[in-house]
Amino acid sequence: MRRQRRMKVVATLGPASAAPEMLERLVNAGVDVFRINMSHTTHDVAREMLYALRRLGKQIRHPIGILADLQGPKFRVGQFKDEQIQLQPNNIFTFDQDKKPGSNKRVYLPHPPIFEAVKADHLLLLDDGKLRFRVLEATCDKITAEVLNAGTLASRKGITLPNTVVPVSPLTEKDEADLDLALDLGADWIALSFIQRAADVAEISSRIDEQSAVMVKIERPTALDELDEIIALADGLMVARGDLGVELPLETVPRLQKRIIRKARAAGKPVVVATQMLESMISSPIPTRAEVSDVANAVFEGADAVMLSAESAVGNYPVEAINMMDKIAADVENDKTYESVVHAISTPPQATAADAIATAAYAIARTVKLSAIVCFTARGASALRVARERPGLAVLGLTPIPSVAHRMSIVWGVQSVLTSDPENLSDMVRKACRIAFEEGLVKAGEGILVLAGVPFGAPGSTNMIRIAFVNENGEPIDGE
Image (cartoon, rainbow, N blue to C red; front, top):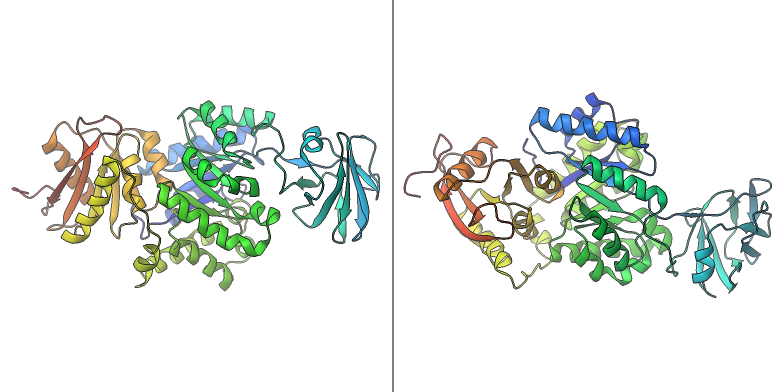
């Protein structure tokens, strides 16, 4: 199933998209990876979704990626006596550990670690940032704060602390159960929410232990402080602009998006841009012009993927939203300026043999005017390194491991195919030519570049480049 664009599309599953017939329509429209939001999905429903996607992938013989998104630690205030209160600027308000219903003066905050961590002048953001408080004084059981803007505060609304590292585990009890389920079902990617520091990623990664790939959602200012360390530990990144825009000034989010994409690309880690990309298409069959520009900018920046949330989960037009993503990406990538813009970001190779080979492969393919780069890969690493160069030609990842094929479905430009390891060098070239020809990536008379490692099937052994030209039957031309 060849796409007409190289950037990938992630769609969130929900009531509007979970039916088996709808899943097939969405894949045909352009979905490469499906996200299961564990915040709103029961285990029984998640299990049904994943099984349906695996059946569909086998039916259409096309790897479909599955991303399980953990909820992460979330904090909420308690109940108010009248369910909601009105607050005005300069009001003094108290958060305490008294379980009695709240008033317009105070409310129960059932999270002791917050009292341990918060300090004077820290900000408290309530109800997705609609209400802002500045801490005046904090003790082990009471936080006194000044209200900075007028608004209504209702029971059980969320509270975020952009300046504060709260000493809590990155996994709640719910996350523990959800992670166990996702790993048991074989989810390809695990997305980690509300990561505060690199140590959080290390803690969860050690538990996952390569069963799935780890995608870190960047949505907290404290995570940005350790961005380089987090990227080094993660398998992929997500620019989670929703919560990032709550905890930081909105005007800073576009430049932070560019910074995260640039650093992820330089490290060769897939990066996804998410939140409100086609928000109006929840209720409208067409997006706004601003939304189209937003998606196009992510494509120009070289993001590996863009993600739909409510648009595909609960929206009225999930197929139309996917079609629009597909068309925007294809149009941008066909623009004359695309190559120069996407390569304006330098991705210097690391000082390894594998990086040197991937960089050389890109240069050779451009010089000889080849049609595709074919990577035999046991873990997906060589395909990732080639994709990091953002080559202007197809990248075919051939692997005998289903989980690797599924994980590569989120990587820019990589089309993955399940196949056995080659028996020898001749079989390697023959198999690469035949599959590239069958997938429509190369025509008779055109050439491909093959990357592989000897001995075959050994992870991390990419050490060979071979050029081959294809005849009208998809076989290597003799003598090449």
